[in-house]
Image (cartoon, rainbow, N blue to C red; front, side):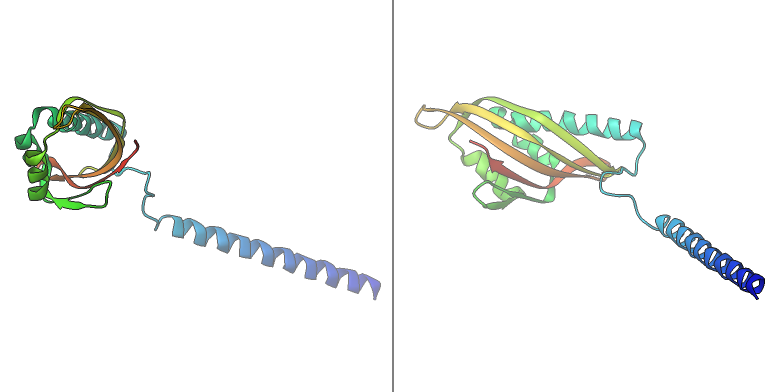
Length: 176
């Protein structure tokens, strides 16, 4: 009887181990299958590293003249890089579109003598979609000749439309 009980216990424990291994195999198979269904995460780029680097340089080359547009009052440049449905949120919460942005520049009585964007970071999320952010420091004189120094932190969303990069949305927060 004892040998029979030992044999049944060995068989029962063998089935328990096999059942546990079977469940483990099922979990691994399901997990592996599901991991293939997940889209790339937000920090993963749908472009190669070389293409992402090229896009980053393109955006940096466009951002510099944008930062200098306050000095040169270059509305023609802004017209090229702001999309027709452009929307920007100012530090005070004011939202302006492309037309209101032009009016803001044209009506400004401030004279900028320097404009620097640093640091400036570009995150590439595909061959046609980029998010850029950084700090902007502009200095100059107001309409009364008083010096000013303004610092902002910004985020801009760039989209390649019809072969050219344009900003569709942005936001800035005043630092000082």
